[in-house]
Structure formats: C-alpha cells, structure tokens
Picture (cartoon, rainbow, N blue to C red):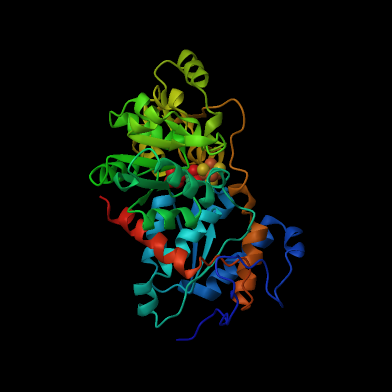
Length: 394
Ligand code: 13P
Ligand code: SF4
C-alpha cells in the first residue's frame, strides 16, 4: 500500500524519552509567524495528503481552531477508546497532554494491533512536549512505590487495590498493572472503584484526591474512611496507624490546578443571582463544590447534559474555560455561564496551537517526525494490563 507518510526508520530509538527533534527536521520558528488562516490551510493540505493514515485526536479542552482540525474529539476515556480502535492510521497526532499521548501509544501499539499490522508501529506525536499535566506531576513513581512499602508496614497491601486516574504517568499505570490495580477516568470512576472493591478491602487512589473523594462519597464511603496521603509529610503520609488501618480509600494529595479554583461561594453567588440556574461541574472540583452542584460529570457528560437540555436552560459550568466557551457558542439557545469569576484554563492544554500542530504535521509528512511519544516496552506491557481492565469495566 502506498503511504503519504515517508517511513520513519529508527526515528525514536530511546524508549520512553520523547524525541524533541530528529536531524533534518523542519524548524518550528517560521510557523510561529504564520497567521491562523495560513496554518489552517497548510494543516488541511497535510490532512488531504495523508488521508486515513493520519488520525488527529482532540481533547475537549483544546482551543476551537485545534478542535476544528481534529478528526475526533472526546474526553479522556473516549480518546483512549479511539486510539485503541485505530485501524488504518500510521500516525496519531494527539492534541491533548502528555499522559494522553502515552496512553494512545500503549493502546494503539498493543501486541494484537502490532500483529495485525505485521509489526508496524503507529507513531504517536504530541505537538508540543511542554503540554504536560500538573496533576499528573504530583505523583512520581518513586513516591508511589515508597508509599506502598510504607503502607505495607501497617496494613496488608495484598488486600489493597491501586487505582490510578488516567491523568498520570505511564509508570503509575504500570504500577497498577503489577499490583492487581486498574486505571480510571472521570467518566468511569465509580464503576472502577466498584470493580476494585470486588477484589480488595481498600483502595489506594492517585493522583487526584478530589475525583477519588467525590466518587467514594457518592458510593456511601465516609469522609473519615478516606485519609489523605501527603507524599511530602514523612511517615505514613502524615497519617496515624489507626487512620490507615481504618481506611477504605487512601487518597493521594494531588489536585487539578484548574478545577481547584472553583469554590462553593461561586455556586451560592450564581444561585442568588439566577434562581433556578443549574450548576454543572467536573468531579475534579473540590468536595465543597461537587456536593452542592446539581450535576457532576466528565467533560463528555457535561456536553451531553447541555445538548439534551431544553432551550432557555440556565447553566453555570465548572470546568476548563475553552470547553465552556465552546458550549456557549454551540448552544446560543441556552444561557451558559462560567462558574468562576476568574479565568480557569489549562495552560498546558493551551500549548497545543496551530503553529505546533502544523509544524509537527509537516515534519511527519516529510518523514522527519518530531515529538514522538513512545513508552518503553516494559512500562507499556504493564500499563496495558491496568488499561485493559479499565476498558473491560462496564
Ligand atoms: P475528562 O476529559 O476525562 O473529563 O478529563 C478532564 C481532564 O482534566 C483531562 O485532563
Ligand atoms: Fe491536568 Fe487539570 Fe489540565 Fe486536565 S485540566 S490536563 S487535570 S492540569
């Protein structure tokens, strides 16, 4: 089969280390001087040239101009499914953040997919390597391993199931794979915790304390059964032996700096000003907000709820600004407000712009791909165990 994408050869010899640039690659600088119209035209040209060999995935928090050029858009769970299902593509360009590109690499290049393609890998590209996630960075594998060992001095860790939010490094997913654990997203966290409680007495949940707490509270687990593990607090993560022994869910002290900004006071202000308004939030918001919201759900759920609402509905939405602004534009028949008076946007998602997208696509088409995300074989194999469990949970 002829391919618009020049074979990449040994473009990425260094396992999980992203390749910033390979020799002969096209420089980024000139792309930054092009207008959005020029960039869009050039991106469209590459999309036409590469056809189904190229899959551009866009997370809901991306800027409108990036979403407009994505083949598929979705939440973290949907994008993992799409990467897992990819059939004909030779390259995935991930408009999202680093952990998402890692997950796409693991799923698109899992053994059965590689066998189907005669061993050919799908190249996964993150247009800007600085697009990380501050929450994912709050749990390092060394800290999680040390915490597990520390917990083992007080409780039987064979009876504890590690659950990592998909917003985490592949090394943490691999940890879960090795220890009978699983990955969750904001759209399946409850089903995943139920899965975990069918297999163990307690759960170690990282890195987002809020998603872990909000989900566990909704399942009837008491706040007093959820100690918070602070990796910087020394022995037992700053907890007493009794707190750990009496725990059902141990929550890692991590959070999303975007969703942490929403406060209960914002909810009260909106309700006072607009009686009857509905408050719709992402479960990465703190408990104080989540508890008093009308609806809490993943980015896709937020979209579905708004799409299904009758004209004239009033909403104050607590999630990343780009998604809320897009909903406002796409649903002029409804009255949509951003829940916070201050700008809460994900600065790292925002790093993916048309200049980086165009630059990475032109390099890809020229056979000199840049910013390849390739997880090392052992981490990928162990992560896949935990990701497959997640994909199988109904
Ligand atoms: P979802 O798209 O899974 O709702 O997650 C939101 C998020 O913060 C992604 O980083
Ligand atoms: Fe990470 Fe929060 Fe940005 Fe999502 S919104 S990528 S959790 S920092």
